[in-house]
Length: 233
Image (cartoon, rainbow, N blue to C red):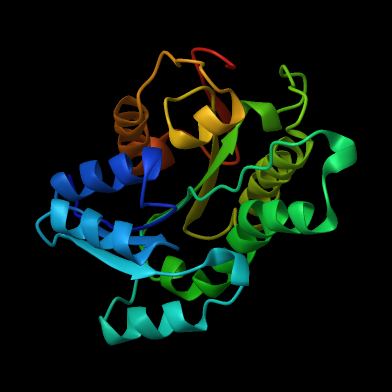
């Protein structure tokens, strides 16, 4: 398997953590982003220094410091970008504030949009770049919806449709774009959304699938929204 340079957001816990670890174990160069610097350091240490960590708050919607960091590390190409970071808002519709809505959309929609724009040069330098947007089954038309998740599910729905738009826009380039719409996985976010519920998949198991998809998905899919779910929840 060709060594790839892979950038993943939301890598400090859950599915992102497990995916980053598994990709690094397979010999890929992994750049991990998350807000929590301490947890990112733990990730880097757990990988014996194989993972390059960069603490960054995506919700600030500024990526100049990231580009400078990549330049300092002489990283000129990104083969796979995994937009995994997610912001949950779990409140009744009438209780969701403007700030709640902004927080969800900043992390789940605007940050991936602007991050892709910022990394276009690095993606074009790859012979076969792949953007993987991590959405939710709740962000797919016709799926089961749940009270309290209007901000989260609608923002993940926007990310799903963005995937289709970008695949069309980039179809004459080397860049493939796909979306994995995840179902229930045992993570802290699931516990916040559905307290007491035990999902049939662990973060490690889902990380294993995303690792495979990061290595191989661009050979089979482009512009696809792919549900990856045993339950919802």
